[in-house]
Length: 231
Image: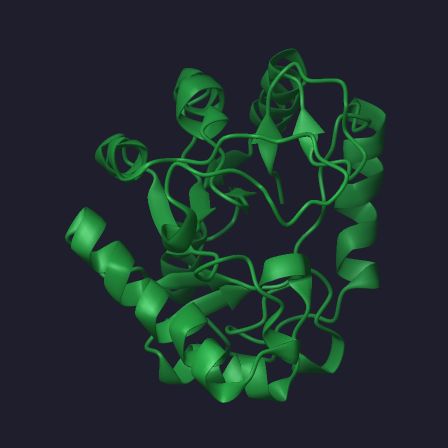
């Protein structure tokens, strides 16, 4: 689980990875015979029994630096990824982060560029709203309407959804499923773990090769595994 890729050092929420660090992290994967792919590709490969050696890479919030900075590094290492975007904030910024710093978000053209370069585009909701506190109308807009808007932008309805802030409950999961998404990403969904509440590992600027190795070992121990047969 990545967010922003830039050289900005003002990072109160630990969401920024410098380009050189991402380059080293992707190289770390390649050196171990692992390939970063979109979550959609990972799930399809698992369903076909050929998921070994694949690692799902996600970039939350849809920062403009995904296209400018992350995408060239992904291509360099033969990787793809899923970028979860906010169609209600096209060309805006991360206003939900009270402490800042302000980072520009992808425009509709930027989203189309990411898709044209082989990256998977998923929804992060409409405005980055905590779904566990949303009323019914807001929940509908954040899930179903955001999917419709992204279909208008890319020509294809997104398969994946990512819960803002990683917060989920049964109502949010049910709404995402009902909106037509094939999968959804959380962080540590606990008992709700499943194809519509996939666990992920947070990656930030402090993740050296040693820390990545430790996280690789600890992730399956810390997170509840997917139910048997789940794809």
